[in-house]
Image (cartoon, rainbow, N blue to C red; front, side, top):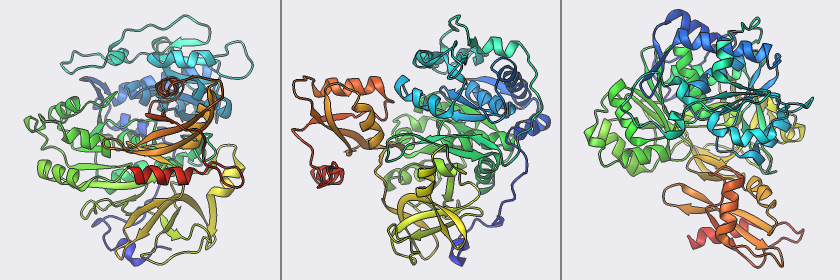
Length: 556
């Protein structure tokens, strides 16, 4: 039950509840294309895709999924590429086929991709040309099960206009799609013009399934419906009062729910324009803000720190910016002050997770608090409980955040044990345990105090040590490994691995680190590897990672 304090600093003239459409998310693209057919929707290194062009291409790809790949309602389809017009098109094509999007971090490698395919049962995938080498070893064109159909996107196909912006090499690369049964070039799939069948997915049907990892070390799929996805995409538009004339800088990765909801799905719903970057580049970002009069930018802390560190920033006209929002890690006060001095804006922080399709908390734009998660947004009941007894705690005491709201997932895919641990009942309502510790002040603002889960926050990316350890144990020279967080001036935290070698096996610390970079996403791979003769263990034989983490914290 929400307290009066929750609304003490609610944005003025903004309704406290949010009525959600009883339509599927693809319908948003249809509406915007009908309203603004010739309006620029995506600007990609000065190349423009209109809303009408977007809708036509997404529908043609949906037809390919249904007629060629055999995708049926509720099937899971993998989406594995960098930010690009094709990422957005693939997302909406999958929804148009009444299927479920499984977004995958493009930093993941073959060993990690195998888990997604096996767990989802996906038979089809959209894959970028530059990442095809990671996916092809898992393509089983002659098998009855497994990944049988791959649609390969070449980013340069959407570079339709000349530009003076520096285009990354992997984006500018010409089309080079191998001729393999079951592997289709994006352009061929689009050109076939297969018409999709009826759009039948409803608000309570599954829409997208982002994966998060946990303390077990295995990624878990978060099942979100069209309604839960709609909740945060519309909520962000309403909270920050965005309109069809808003211009977004879409630089956050779309595979993550923050970028997906606020920098992609929000603009589709509003009929706004997004200026899209395939990879973060502070110079290109500044030039695009000036060139396209960008007014809304959601970033992560590390991105904003890098942007403001640009010694040439004063040469750009950034006066169009109206909203600078973000999260992932607390914004340092000095950096927030620099932003305020430069463009007169407060950095508006928020809080959410994959399980909640991004934000459950946002700071009020008219009264943001620094290093603060914000207040619960529309229709969210957030409480602080004792993590051991689950007893609700009074204002000012630190405990675990639990949330009930329309953006909370249905549960983890095919994982009843994880679901049983993730949800609790309070006052007859189902609450999600976040694993994050916080306290609430007298004005209803939530402030993070600690985390209950074993997790490393590296530049806003969540790294789960157990998952990294599970991958490291595949190295023949590793007997034991314990992954902890080490302090890092740029990333906030970075990944450190304490390793015990097998007797008779020789390997250097740098060789282990290099192997990790080759077998897992780069943000997960330990930047630091240190050999130890043994790891401390409890009486039950478990590695005492907390003790090792405390030693690292004290040494730092």
